[in-house]
Amino acid sequence: MVSYTYLKLQTEKMNDVFREIVLFQDELSRKIHKALFSLDDACYRQSTNNIVAAVQEAAQSGLSKLHIIAGWENILKIAIWTSDRPLIHEVLSLIKKTGVKENELRPFKNADIGDIFPWLYYGNRFDILRKICSAAKTKTELMTDSRKVLVYCHLVSVETEKIVASSL
Image 1 (cartoon, rainbow, N blue to C red):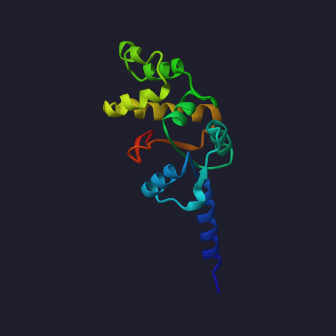
Image 2: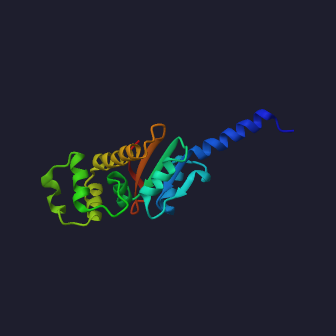
């Protein structure tokens, strides 16, 4: 016979599982996050094409922790809070706010936003990548009014198959 206390603990455990959600961009992102955090499979939800809408929906679902694990472009979408591909001037403005000087960004004035990540990553500018993850975290908290939700943003690199920066 199963005791009431055991059933109550199991129910609480299941509720906790669903109170922590991981929005992941793709299967690689899920695999990388799961290897590091070892959360239950039920916590993982793949983001739609519109990561901002997915974040808004998840933040309103009564959870206590929201992990977002995505690549460069999707982390930028969250930090800038746009469903569309961020424009280069928006990305450069965001990076300037992290402390990068205008003259360092000048070569990227007409570049593709994808060209900036390798410059930061291979240039060992992990402090800037962390600040961008923190900007995504802050923007999520601000735009979703999730005062009681802990938000963690993790930037994954397809090339290295690792989390290269985080808001933690």
